[in-house]
Image 1 (cartoon, rainbow, N blue to C red):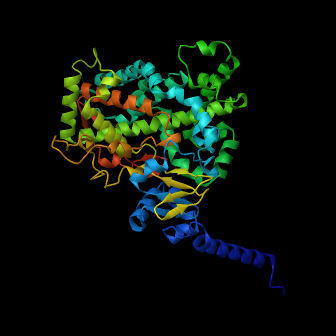
Image 2 (image 1 turned 180 degrees about the horizontal axis):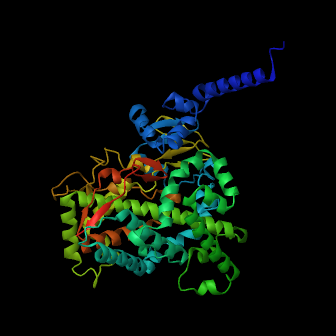
Image 3 (image 1 turned 180 degrees about the vertical axis):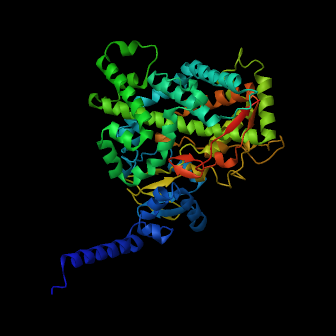
Length: 509
């Protein structure tokens, strides 16, 4: 009897390969000298287990490992993570020419979007085509619409909920607000989500639920490829949460087709310039890049990033303002003095940005909501990255995370506490406290460097206008809402609160 049957040969080959791979990763890899747990140096399956099967928990493992091993660690067989607030701007500087690892191109199913472009020079050219659309000047031209949407939200809260002992979810209201804003700003389309009963819309609810599938598609790209190969009608049956998203994408695709058919005439004279007209006439894009698929993926990227991150920051601010009487009273007093008639004579965005305590509240909300909680992975294809005695070889992925950056107790004492006074050099009773100068450079909810978030100016405008008018015009109190409704319990690219919580619910007095 031949002892070397095909089965035995296969088993021996697998054992030999696994042993050799393990020896290489632990002893011979260029990353072998970096500190960190041996299990994650051996296999990436631990990350998969934590993020896919336990639900976005790998970020908390990274936090524990940094506490154990120090500021630079190996978090899987091929990637190094750094937690050092002083090093963030060095790593993600505007002069950097980093790319993304190729494995991240299909992580979100939008490989043609600017966000998922891999190579640095290609990304820079694509960003040059899009960035004028999100400039501060362009956002200021659009502010009357943002103010109109904020007024509509406040008016509904006043007329439908004030004095009626009816709880309302401000998570839903803020999601409807940010959706209406980004959709009209980017696509010239108004879906009037703020008109929906209790502000609950199928589209924003679906976006929120679909965030929980991002790790599945990221760790198992074949699953995403399979879903994308199926007709949308079939996917909608398998996952009904997808239907509102497919409907939205279908409408956007039809809009792009109309513009492409008439791009040489009417699009340049439209009163409302959309992201599509910007791209179709951009000198930075080659003609073959001005495709239907590219424009549609750009649209999907903008909506996904522009809705949930701003909504989360608004909800974070609202909870902590209402949960702390000193913060609530101080903000209300500043807004009353600055804006006696918020309906008839509202302050401009520039004026609101100069209100010290409102500015501090916005900064603190951005700090604790983190923006994107997913680590920002980069590679330098050509040069090593030096950190202390360690050298990250060219082509090796490295990353940092806003979640750890914003919770560095050496920069932000009591980092889990919502303390707007830290941005003013005061505690929230007005007494002098820690030095606040220079804190802003450690605040990175929009990232930093050449891949910094495009929508920063629009998000800031929404934050200032919404918070100023909600807390100037409405008298609110929390309804059955605890801190776990806003604290990050899982990382699904965006921070997600504990499952089963109902968001920030309030009563309007």
